[in-house]
Amino acid sequence: PVTIFNAGTAISATLANGSFVGETKTLANRNAGAVTITPTTFLNGTSFTIRQNGLVNCVWIDNTQGWMLMTPKIYASSDAAALYYVTA
Figure (tube, rainbow, N blue to C red):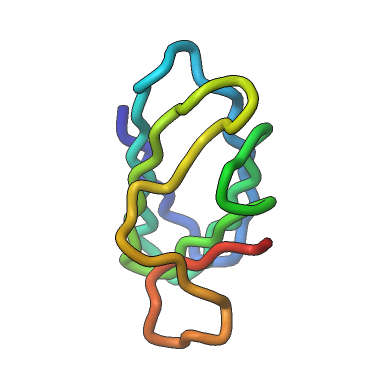
């Protein structure tokens, strides 16, 4: 499933736990408002933010580890060039 955010201002969203191991989600932000997503269970930190034109893919690992970002690198908010970043 794909979720596309298209807000002109910053918004927050939640991501419920997955239904089965290997479930995937694609989240994209088309507009200027950053989207901060807080999964119920998240392996990489507490939340992640998708900046304008950013896209992330997540996979559900299990009820203990939760969602994991399927990305080669985890960025911090200080990396201005990053289209997404994780909050620990």
